[in-house]
Image (cartoon, rainbow, N blue to C red; front, side, top):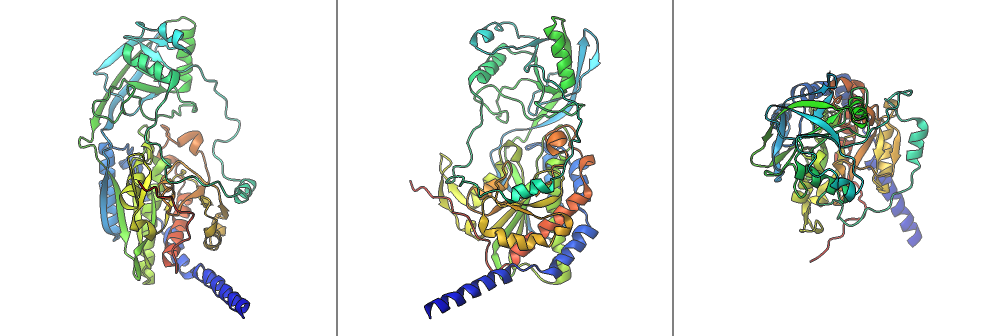
Length: 523
């Protein structure tokens, strides 16, 4: 009798699981209508890039972009639309004017971009180029007293390989199968998932200490990849012990130039042919109060309104282009997801059971700062050593956080972050979009973006598998990350699938199952 009861209970349990994860075809039909047939995702993307790009955290342009997004979400009819302060982040930065030229032994304009947070030169400066070639303390000592008034080359030459294969790629069936067959990853730890500071030690620190002691006019480098006019640029480096965002940080002008021009100058210098470079850099430090802001908005739930389904992307970008694939694409898609959901709810007359919350994060490029601040404010409390010492009530009410931040490529599936308990649920939901090329679930972790802030504190956080296109090869953090490299069909597909996942998560009987929760260390 006991076995019969157990068997009946198992049958009922399995039936309930399958019933609550069954795809709502009528819901998906409406979502496809607004996501694929009546899409506005490229309109959002054009605003974020051509009008409100770039969006460097702390910059005036980011403030303008935030104001636009808040207004847009209000127009769509979302509620509780607001910004949430986090920080202090420190000072922002805007580029006002820049040019760089080789003045001799013969003239040519140089393709290059200042690193973010570089200071103004106060007019044009001109200096002889010197290569700082130092592998040890003895080498460094040779340059003491020799860098003042010079323009320093920081890197050695880099060979350029011709492109015999296309730079843009999509996942092959074999690659997707390999991902699907990947084993469950090892647990990531107990909540100490983020370092507090990033820095460089050893010879790198000594080299930069010498540079700041000597005070050259500027420092030129080249990125580890990029050619044919594509330049990958990020932030400047302050004197040791400071962040470039710190109000009184000492920062020298630093410029990343194209590999072809860097190599040309390097070869001339190594041949003992004097090279002179001029540059004129005008910048402005912004954000006097040091605080930054995430964007939050909601579609209220009905019977389970205190439970939440979150979806989001990072809103900030680097500064040499307009932040299109990184991450105007993700932000435009999530704004479009909010619009699709609003239109679907209006037409169907069926509200979500759980509250739907969109979040657009700033500070991602400096270390997931905006989403980490949200997690620390709402979900957990950490001590001074960054250890979780309390799990807050709201943590247990978030069913999932869905993120998009791998460029313009269409969705091919979902990274489950080791959460094998959601496999059957996600398989049911994803199978509805086989015709759009989304088929793969992998237990693999993927990193580098804001879902980690949720996964680290025990909330199911997911990033979607996306075709790379030319993300890492051409656009990620480069001067070519512009609207022109966005693929409209791919972004429509992504917004449609995410909208379906969000709404189906909201309508489930239960919250999504969770991995092992972070250990709380009592002190």
